[in-house]
Image (tube, rainbow, N blue to C red; front, side, top):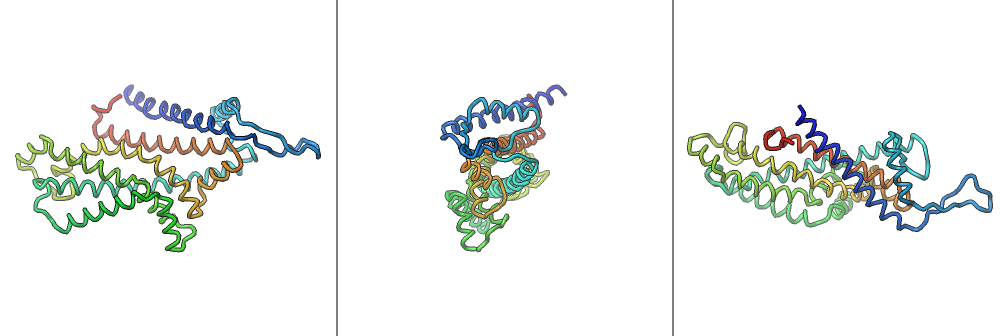
Length: 309
C-alpha cells in the first residue's frame, strides 16, 4: 500500500507540480520582455483613459497563489464565470481532439510495427505472405512520407480539397499523420518487438512446442508474451509523444476553425493576455502528465515488480 501511494505521489503529483511550474515560469519569463500593455481604466478621467500594465514575476506569483486557493485568474481583460466556462468548453474540445489523434497515431504505429517485426521472424510468423509484406511496406513508406509533412500543412490541404470549414475527423487525421507520432511509434514498436521475439524465452517456448498465432499476436500464444513485454517500453515512450500532438493541435484548430484552445491562445497572444496564455499552457501540461501517468499505470500492471517505486 505504501509503495502504491509513493508511486502515485512521485509519478503524478510531484511531476505535475514540477513540470507545471517549469513550463509556466518559462513562458511568463519570455512574456515579461513584451512591451507594456495599454488598457482602459474605468476609474480614469476623460483625458486619461488608458493605463500601462507590465507583466512581472510578482504578478506570476499572485497567479500561482490564486490557483492554489482554487480561484485561478483566467484572464486580465474581463472577469466573470462565463469566461471560465467558455475556456472549459474550449479545453474539452482541444483535449478530445488531441486524445483521438493520439489514439489513432498509436494504433497505426503499434499495428504496423508489430506486423513488421513479426514478418522479420519467420519462425514466429510462419510462411511468408507476399500481399501482407507489400501492404506493410507500402503503409510504412506512406506513413514516412506523411510524417515528414507538418500537421498544419496536411490540415490545410484537406481543408482545400474537401472544402470543409469545421471537421473534427479531418483534424484528427491531420494530427495523427502529420505530427510524426505514428512513424515514431512504428519504429519503436518494430525495434522493441523484434528484439523481444528474438529473446531466449521465446526460443525456449517455441522449442517446447507452444503455439504461435501467425502475424497478429493473439492472447495465449507465444508472440503475445513478447508483445506484452514490448508494451513495457512502448507505452511510456509513446505517451511522451503527446506534446507534439498538443502543440500541433493549436494550429490545426485555427485551420479548421474549431472552437478550441488554439483560437484562445492566438487571441491572448495578440492581446497580451498573459494569464490566459499561462492557463492554456497549464491545462496542456496537466493533460499530458495525466496521460503519461495512465501509461505508467499500464506498465506497472504489466510488470509491477520491475516498476515498483
